[in-house]
Image (cartoon, rainbow, N blue to C red):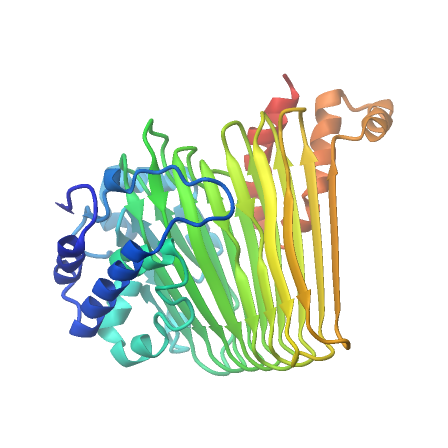
Length: 444
């Protein structure tokens, strides 16, 4: 096991790079990023981030190498993942899987039929070594280290993550998945995900995240960069169920070329504070971007989520659908940006934010920034905040349902648009999560 002491400085950044045997350019990238991190202030907008960064462990490697055989994984760790159905999902449904434990990859494997298509699916550290030219061409170009303080921190101390390259004219019939687990107290996880879907290709990627609950805070500050080629499509599905001591501060961005499509499907069930706004930069003409999100905010929990859509190309389209649930005084807010630039003529954007509050203490706000710089484009925004409709509840109860079942049915109907975007296995998992976290509250 290799673990750095708590806190971060330039010497520790160098040590991380040395432990990974990285090329000189990556070491320099890390050190330059650390300087940016030091110079950047905490975000001046949004919720307060009250985490002591000196109390975080920035690197912990538990196992020496990445396994491609599930049976060779440590039995205690394997049991943890099997309890949540991870192994069964790989066997029954997925084309390939990557698992990260703390700072490094633990397991990586994919079906032979995908290898035969020359698809690259590796942990990011291995990809840097095995495909250095391809890696350097795209890494850090879309989310630069000066984007925000936590992107800079990730750039300095990143470890693990997923690298995917889909060659031209290639479609995957089954999704790829990565699963990220923080298992230690005061731990920081800083994976770096880089996905390239080349021209006329298609990919569905699924990401899951969990952590046990501790009395002190942990930090998850990831960076995701996605390149969608001409006539290509990428769907990125996230279901995060971090424990309520995790600060989840993530930067996700996709660049979409002509006639390309990028779809974000983003579920936020856990964490103490989430600040996450998946973005599409619609560079190409006729490109499309969408983001469908659900956020559940419980007691002492803030879900500050949304999306960003930047229209650069002509005839581009974007759609944002945000569903939020607040209970026990939780705060579930939408924050987003839609910008249709002057040259993005004949473009259209639609934003719809719906929130349901299950008690008087919960809160929801909408913070939209909508900009349209030309007269041939349209931009629409709609927001609603509501409670369980007593008339609808009464109607269902007159049809033979008790109050709990009627409430459950209404809440499931509220999030139905999100569930429809999930593969069947994950829609079932989300149902169980929501029933466990929301429905039980309605029974009190």
